[in-house]
Image (cartoon, rainbow, N blue to C red; front, side, top):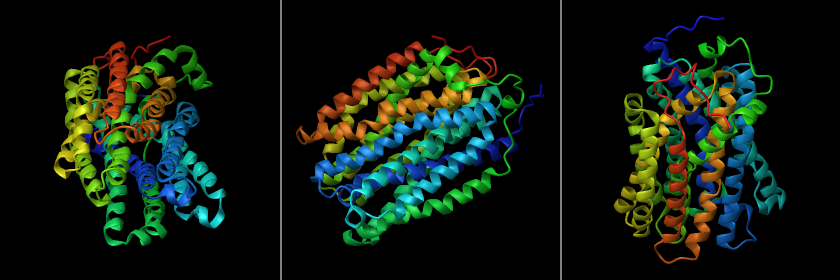
Length: 434
């Protein structure tokens, strides 16, 4: 058996930085699609639909990425549990980056007809497949290197990546939106962020080329033959509970970053520049608070923060939609910020919490499948359901608030059934069996 040694802070900083950079790049790829879906993909790829139906169709292709993510967790989780965490980081980044660049090169419906939305769907699926593998590899890179007393802190670095990726994606979109005419943006401007994904992917591969395998994986003498089968047989209850628990985090995040963008521009008549600035400012607050919340998770436990975040989400959804409906930038920013603070109270510690719940031999598969199934429940459906609910309501979309509050209560119940893991070393944490 290999000797497992404590990794010193300088090495942990390098590992955490590489992990953060990789998740930022992959989530950039994922988010740039969500922003484009809210702004331009409907008319370009579904021009025969009404404006509402076109938006719903674009969000439908957006949702396909979430459906693919659990499949990516199974595929890359198998590699991670059988061959190591490091190969997952390289393969998933290559797949996501290549499919994102391809979206930027894809002709519209007006050029190649029905093949355009079909290819868009396929590329979005491949994007999701790659991202489904990314999260498990990235968080285990830090979680399995980190000292137990600071595991939540170091594992929170990959969780900052989505905020950085979102800011990169929307920063590019904002710059293009502010400098190009609507015609230029629709013709070619929206493609630029997708093309940029190629350069970002190459830089991410360079950062990850020198990473070492995690000591927790190296000490394993007995690897699961078929990890997903073992997870399904012995940990199915844990997977379902974690998926249900994480659903509200995804629902809140994509309600703020994707649905509200479309709602604000299409229903309220707010310029896309103003909407992007409000959302991006709230994401900056979220990203800045991530390590602070993670430190609290190391001190007080993972479960208490998750329960607090769920409770705050349930209480804040109605105020959030009311503030959004004002169309006033400052009030919208406050609504978004409150929601994302509740979100990050949970997701700052999830990268430590989920791996601690699973035994090492199936950890890459189990943690990633639970995490990404939560994305299907909360992320894939939220923009579609919220758009439909808002269409049939008044100026204030109370039905959207009701929908999000219901998901928060579901997640609260699931978190209540999960155990605390903070005092338990990650290598010996007792899994929940079903």
